[in-house]
Length: 140
Image 1 (spheres, rainbow, N blue to C red):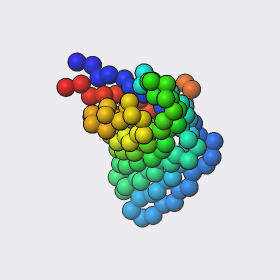
Image 2: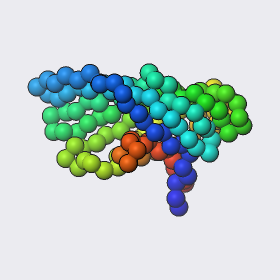
Image 3: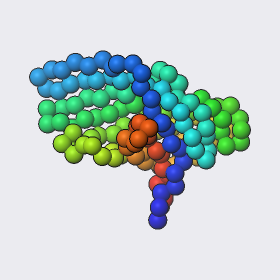
């Protein structure tokens, strides 16, 4: 059974992040914005999103992105979706798609029953036009 695609977030970067290294790893905070398209929502990624990446001594990177979407839900109503998206990537296996676990909060009356209760997965990949994070409903 195939997972159902719900959102495609096109991530854009135009500012340098902040990074520092220690003897046990490194921290990199990357600001971003973007656009989002899907069957349930269309809009933008507000320009204050940040992806915090912490890499440990053996090269495993924990990524935790937090960002707000503004746009219209599937009923055409203005709304917001907050996303906290967590993932792990082994730098020795990059490049390639990586998986994430998102949590959604929304003020959309139409989307709240769906986004607040179901389980989802994210898949991130670099493409010709940049980074895309696609979210899928996990089919049971």
